[in-house]
Image (cartoon, rainbow over all chains, first blue to last red; front, side):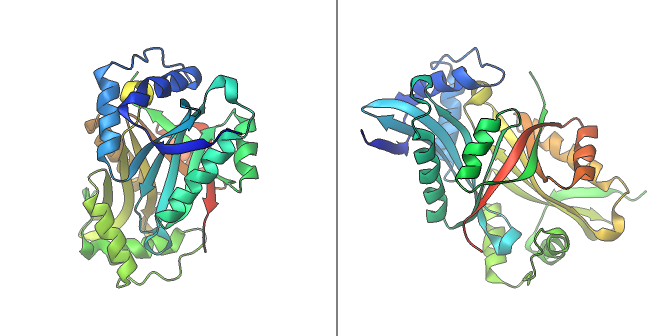
Length: 152
Length: 152
């Protein structure tokens, strides 16, 4: 099997990453023009933040997955850092091949390397397949995730 | 009614904040010695991060509440920032007086001022009173929150 390379994304990956985000975002993000300066500004903000990482998963030279990792300082658990996994996506034609599992296990390792006490994520309430996937990797569904939208 | 002052916490607030965290943390954080260098390191890490804010809520010169605000850059929603509310606590003797509501509404305003598209939080699955509280403020329970503990 080809090697899955997990690494920080570059601007050159943005087009492939935005295509994956557009494919799965709920509601669909119809405006995914990689040349839109707002995407470039967001990429730059992530890259400038030492506690945020945008990840590209590469297989045979093709970007086939993405996720964003955050490392959050906090007082709880005697001042422990926490890892945050967000915006996990895999290209449609490569799902069901355990690429997601390899991505998440790698992400957990990155959190361990940053001395995080725990890793947290939220998953859409309707995605019971995703909940089972994360449960298999040891995640416990202990919380509810709530969102307040401030603008359209 | 006395004015609730919401502001960034200082090191001098740490003792009061840790007492509130110890009171409610699940499982209880029994080691909340404010002089523990790990707490000071965590405070410094939050203060050094321009995208993290530890908040103290002050009433008549007493620190009566705390929360942590995070501002996360991301590609979704055309490169929008998201606000994250964590570790919300109010002292035991002042609950049920809508201080929490004033804290969260203020936090939402801070997220708006940072041009966030949305505000997100997780709440322990068992705290249905908290879910109702956030729902009343407009938060929608759209996700499940999952955690993986990496060490004790």
